[in-house]
Length: 152
Image (cartoon, rainbow, N blue to C red):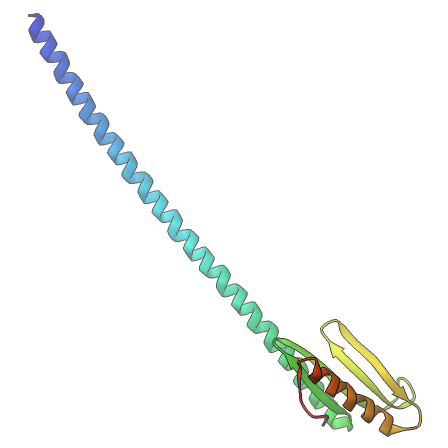
């Protein structure tokens, strides 16, 4: 009779162990599935962030180009001369402004970059002075590695 109980106890132990292994196996599979879903979601998010960064860079470049074109159109209508200088993604605009009503000068040379516009030289009588200064400054920019258009 003790042998029957012993066999019965051993049988229950084996059945319990098998059931425990099945539950553990199901848990491992479930954990792996969740981990895979998380990895896929992270990859999708990373791709979305990369796309947003690229889109932002494209928009910035388009804005800079649009601003340059607007500046060139505005200045070309007024008889002012403009040179656009580029170095990588950076843009500088050198302009000879003639007959400025704001400053009562016959000419001035302005320098525009992302931080704003500076007036570098002005003249009250000699219009050629501004052209000479602007030409020299364009040449200096080119010496620093910038690619500049002619003053037109």
